[in-house]
Structure formats: structure tokens, C-alpha cells
Length: 399
Image (tube, rainbow, N blue to C red):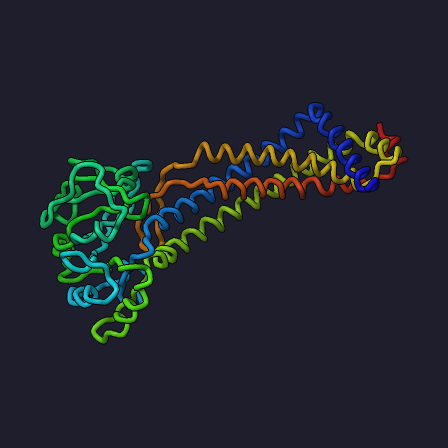
């Protein structure tokens, strides 16, 4: 036990000695700390966009909800469902029902052009035609201001996210659709889901406005339970009258978010790696400077019997500590500046805007700090090896 104890004692002694000399190297150490902090802050803030979009998509889906599209369609924009098909779908087994019938909502999905409040630029915003069962299918729907539109009239209700991001959507204002003005009469929330970026209107009013006849683009429905999906799917896909593709909402929104999430995550990681390389060189410079300044002290310790291993570990400890401080500062700055910050971006699956809130999650903060520690490890490794391998006689002669 004496050997390992002596080794740990040496590590502790050299590490404490190194840390006591930090005030003498505040300039170079501070540069490394704030360089790493900047890298982590940028990484966490960019990746929080992807996390926010993913959370928005997840909040849009319910495990006992399904969406029915035209066979081969990957999104509502590419789908269409005839009114006769809707009646067949509503008769399928496994659907939840109330006194009025199946909880199935055939819906239209069109795009209107509005201006972003932040930039004044044009943006594609979803205008969704719904039926009376839509609020029942979506458990998280809640009208929070004004009133619901009257069925059969040219009135709309606005998602909270859309109201915050786009101009001209206050209650009492009007939305220009075709040659008509559609008054805004209410605002709704949907637990932060994708629906909050949308504008809702009576589907039977929207159909003639866009010359859609008796057709829709998707059917949203609620199952009796998640386990009822196989029977529901089999009934639809085996019915010769239909050419549709039923999907669980969870699967549909996972596919919808995949392209955008992977794009932002990939770009964010690339930016972080490029900036991280710069931070590694900064850490290398800092630790080489520290080792050079303490060359004689390290050589003296080795002459007194201290081993090379504790020297390497002590230098790495200092480098990791600086990286931990920098990473923590960067993570906190990103959290304070961006967590909950609202924005909108293009959903490539529907070519429309999706409003979301940046999500600086604990897992993302941990990833940022781990990335900082990797930078510190790489930046401290070579100086540590140099300190351990430098000949004692040569180091003692340095001034």
C-alpha cells in the first residue's frame, strides 16, 4: 500500500503547488478559460435550437393519436384525402368515440405569407382548416384569449407561438386570405407543440376559399389506446376503397423533425469542433507557458525523488481545472442568454415556419462541459509529457 499512497501523495503535492502559482499566470490562464467558455457557449446555444425544435415536435405528438395521409406522402403538403375516404376512415376499428361519433378530424393544410416581427421578412405560416373534433383529438389544446371562431364563418384563432413571432395577428386584427378578410377572434396554446405556430379556421369555410372541393389533406384521429393501432392500420391498408398510410403521431413528428434536427446538430457540432481546435491551441500555449515557467521547480521535485507519473497527472489536473471553469462559465452564459428564447425557423418537411423555444437542457449543459474537459485534456497532455520527460540537469540550468 505504501507505493500507491506515495504516488497519490506526490500527485497531491505537485498539484497544490501548481495551483498556488496560478495567480502568477492570470493572463495566460484567463485567456484559456474564456476561450473555452466561448466555445462551450456557442456550442450549447446552437445545439439548444435543435433541442428546442425536438421538444416542440415531441409536445405535438400523443401516443394514442394517429395521422392518416395519402399512401406515399411524407407530409401533409404532399397528401390529399377525399371526403368519401374520411367517412371510411372514421368507421375503422380502434378509434375512440363519443356521443357524436369517432374522434377523427379531417383537416386542410395551406400556407399564408406573413411578416416576421423580428426581421420584417416574409415567412410561410400554416393555415389549418379543422373540424369540430380537432380540439378533442388534441388533448393539449387550450383557448387562452378571446373566443373560438364560429363554425361556418370567416374567423380564425391563432396559436400563441404564431402570435408572438408574426405581425398582424392580435385579437381584433384581420388576416387576408384570398380576396377576403378573416378576423382574429382568439388565441390558443398547445403545450408548446407545433400547433402553436398555426392559424386555425373552419375547414368547410377554407375549402371553397382555396377551391379544394370535398377534399382534405390528412385525418388526425384518437385511438381507444396505443395498442389499438395495429388493428386500425390493418383495417385501412387492407380496405380496397382506400389508398392511405396511417402512422402514429409520435413516428410522424419524429420523421418531420429528423432533417432539421440533424442539420442543426451537424452544423453546431462542426462549428464547435472548429472553435474547439482554436481553444486547444490556446490551452496548449497556456500549459506550455506554465510548464516552462516552472521547469526548475519540477526538475527539483524530480531530483528529490518525485516520479514522472505524478508530474503528468498534476499538469493535466491544472489543465482540466481551467477547462472545467471555462466550460462552466460558457454553459451558464448560454443558459442565461438562450434558455426559453423564442424564435422561428423553416420546417423543411412542410416548407412553413415552426415557432419554438431554445431548450438548454441539463443534458446539453453536461455535453458542453464534457467537451470543455476534452479540450483541456488534449491541451494539457503534450505539455504534461514534456514536463515529465525534460532532463533534470537541463531543466535545472534554465533561468
